[in-house]
Length: 177
Image (cartoon, rainbow, N blue to C red; front, side, top):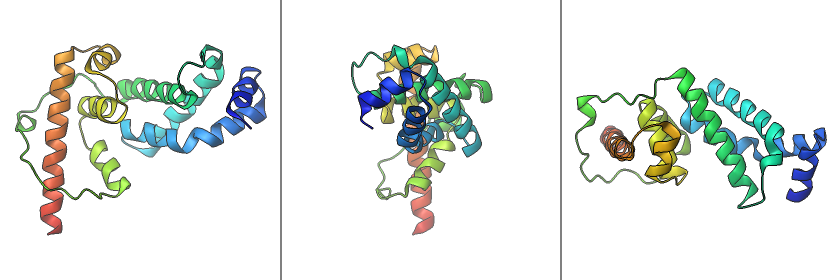
């Protein structure tokens, strides 16, 4: 089924098209949800809620940009909404996170699973900002609007998230040596 056929079928609430849409995007979008949420059950719930929103609002897709990008944005928004319910996003700052990480030579070939675990270990606010900026490509202005924070807070949280990740990578590297 081509993408335009898939979209048209979903707009007509055709169950075969909806199943095809799910099968095509479930795996990569589960990965998106898992980066924001700490466990697979929450990620699965966000994924299913995201697909329900896609099915309900597919008529709002205007064919500007890629369809996968639109689906991804719905999933990111759903994961963030779920995160707000589960974990406080008020970005509490711990003094130990303020240190600037040194330049390390962390193993660049981390297994995907290890990277997801590292991201999930970040505090909710750090994790959300890091994912939105470094992985999804949103600007600090967009992140500030999405999370209802200032641009400065977004920049600060990104810097602290990177520093925390670098310290943890350096620790893992030291343990492995």
